[in-house]
Structure formats: C-alpha cells, structure tokens
Amino acid sequence: MGSSELIFRGHDETQTTSDAYSPKPPKPWLAVTRPIRYLLLEQRLVFILVGIAIATLFFTLLPSSSSSSPYEHDPIPNTFSHFSHELTTPMRYKYYEPLRVGFQSASSGGKIPLGLKSKSLRIVVTGGAGFVGSHLVDRLIARGDSVIVVDNFFTGRKENVMHHFKNPRFELIRHDVVEPLLLEVDQIYHLACPASPVHYKHNPVKTIKTNVVGTLNMLGLAKRVGARFLLTSTSEVYGDPLQHPQVETYWGNVNPIGVRSCYDEGKRTAETLTMDYHRGADVEVRIARIFNTYGPRMCIDDGRVVSNFVAQALRKEPMTVYGDGKQTRSFQFVSDLVEGLMRLMEGEHVGPFNLGNPGEFTMLELAKVSVFLLKKNAENFSMYELFLRSLSVHIF
Ligand SMILES: NC(=O)c1ccc[n+]([C@@H]2O[C@H](COP(=O)([O-])OP(=O)(O)OC[C@H]3O[C@@H](n4cnc5c(N)ncnc54)[C@H](O)[C@@H]3O)[C@@H](O)[C@H]2O)c1
Image 1 (cartoon, rainbow, N blue to C red):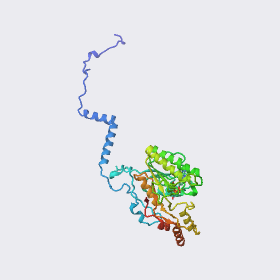
Image 2: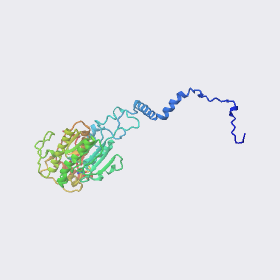
Image 3: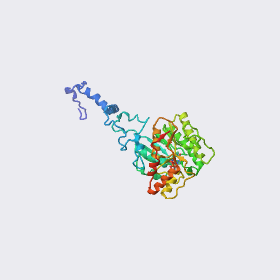
Image 4: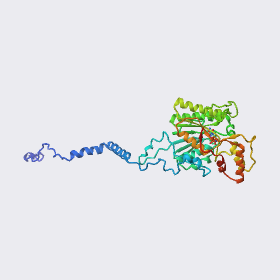
C-alpha cells in the first residue's frame, strides 16, 4: 500500500456515542418564567397602562388634604358682601370669592388630584391699559387668572399695567381691535374704545370703526374659541333720555347724525352685534351699560366733570361750574364697577345691565367737595371717594 493511500480507521472503533436525538430534561420553572419574560420584554405598553390605571385609582380615592376653597392660596379676604361698607384705603380693592359658574366643575367637591392645580382662566381684556381696564386686570390677576391685555394705547398707558410685567400670568399685546386677532382664551372683556368725548370726537370714524369692526372681530374670536364675551357699553346708548331714571328696557332717544353719534350709535351697534352673535351663533355674551365712573388712573384731562374738578383742585385753580350747578349726575367708584363687571361675566344673565350709582349729586355739591379737598391740600382721590362713593354696585 502506497504512502498516499487513505486509511480509514474508524470502522474499527466501537461507536460509543449515540446519534439519536435526546431532548434535555424539562425544567418545570421555565413554564412560569417564560410568559413573564415575554410579557416584560414584549408587552411593556400593557404594563405602563396598568401602572397608570393603578395610579389614577389611587389618587382619585385619596381624600383631599383640604376641603376649603380652591383659591385658598390667594391671601386676599373674601369680603364681597361687605366691601362697600369697609372703606379703609383709597383704592378699596376688595376681593370676593370668585364666582366661576361653568368653570368650577374641575375643582368642585374639593378633590383635586395631587400635582394638578385648579383651572385658572385665560382672559383677554381689550382696552386693558386704559382706566377701567387696568383696574379689571389687577383684579383678575389677583384672582389667579392669566390675563392678556390687547391695547393700541390710543388713550391707555403702559404705566397702568407695568406693575404686572414680571408676572408670568400677564401678557401685553399692542394691537388695534379693528384688525382680527386669534387667541386661545376662556373669556373676553371687550373694553377697547375711547370713553371720553374729547377722545372719541378726536377721530369719529375711527371711534365707530372701533365699536363696530372691533366688536365684530372680538365676537368672531369668541365664537371661534368658544369664549364668553362681555361688552362694556354705556349709558350713552339712551342718548338724550326722555325717561328718568333709565331702565334697561328703555330704548333711548339718540341722535344718529350728531357729533357724539360715533360713540352713542357705535355702542348701540356693538350691542346689536353682541345680541345677534348670541342668538345666531350661540355665543355666550354679557352686556354692561356703564354710567359715570371715577377713580385713580382716569385721564385727568378728559374733559369730564370729576376729572375737571379734581384737576382744578390739585392745581389750586378756580372751579368751573356750568349753569346754576344744580344739574345732577351719578358717580361710581372704579372698583365698584369692576366688581359689577366680574359678577356679570360670571353670572347667568346676558343683560344689558346698567352699572352705576343710583344716587345723584349736584355739580355744586361736587365743587364744594373739591374746595374742601383744596383746603385740606389732599393729593389723592380719597376725599372724593368718601363723599361720592356708592354704597355698592347697583344693578338697577
Ligand atoms: N369711564 C367711564 O365712565 C365709562 C362710562 C361708560 C362706558 N365706558 C366704557 O368702558 C370702556 C373703558 O373705558 P375707560 O374709561 O377705561 O376708557 P379709556 O379711554 O381709559 O380706555 C380705553 C382703552 O381702549 C384702548 N383702545 C381704544 N381704541 C382701541 C382700539 N381700536 N384697539 C385697541 N385698543 C383700543 C385705549 O388705548 C384705552 O387703553 C369703554 O368701552 C367705554 O366706552 C366707560
């Protein structure tokens, strides 16, 4: 046999190992762990969902740590029912328990899941840098709401709201309401409009545009985002009234072509639009007809009687009283008006509601107070307030 011959020796050896398949002996614990491992690795989503369900159940059943007002964090006392009888500071800011009809469900019952805050409202205040608007903003911010002021600064001033600039719940947008605007909000207080004759007669076309197109834009916004809308109308919608006092059912006696018509008729049209959006598009609306209002931040040169007297008193000038001075007017303090506006917004009634002071004062009485103030050399409105302030906001 040559050296290249292949030699196979395996035939000679005895096969000791068997080729037949022999399964490993079953491990009984694998039957339990295998589905668990499968679930852990492949069904993580199921576990997450189960976890969430357990957590939800736990927090829902957990009794609330506090059953008191959800606004308890607010250090301001709830004194609405007595606010008018507690005159202690010139500003007289009194805060009442918020009436959040329609918005309270999330926090009612005192069971707020841990880690979740009660819902605060997002509110637009057009004209919020003006006299009334800035006081309204103060109150809404103090209540815990988030406020967006929309203003073109025609008569309003940044200084009126700049104390909120560092507050994350406050935003200021320079915008003319004659142009459309889209914002996600729960409520719209629509105040944007010059209020004193000096200002609204300055550009009458712009005034009526603000009242008509501006109100249309804000109503459109309310419809689009489902917000509640409040219009600040005026007692001027009664024009030169033939009825005293004017009740809301009185339709007024208005000159449609006079120099004040841009304001009077503008506000009447704004009311019409508001009611048409309410009836035709189911927008939740409120209408306030505001009577003479006075207080800090009112424009000192707006030509209205209170500002005239205050300005003359502060400048120690002679009082200007027209006629025999026996003509009467009613005046309400601005915080009373703001209270009324907020109550109207949170209440159930559409209005229109007159917001003012039913008590009338003669111009001579007002002038006498100014003289008294002059003698006292007072430098703020507090004496006026003592004399003129209404006992409360009257919806009459
Ligand atoms: N103060 C009152 O005695 C009185 C009485 C009746 C009605 N009202 C109504 O209350 C509201 C507020 O009055 P006020 O006394 O605070 O007046 P205001 O002039 O101080 O405030 C009006 C605000 O609206 C802003 N504005 C005007 N036109 C605008 C526009 N086109 N776009 C955006 N912003 C605009 C102004 O810059 C200002 O900040 C007005 O609608 C007014 O008609 C007030």
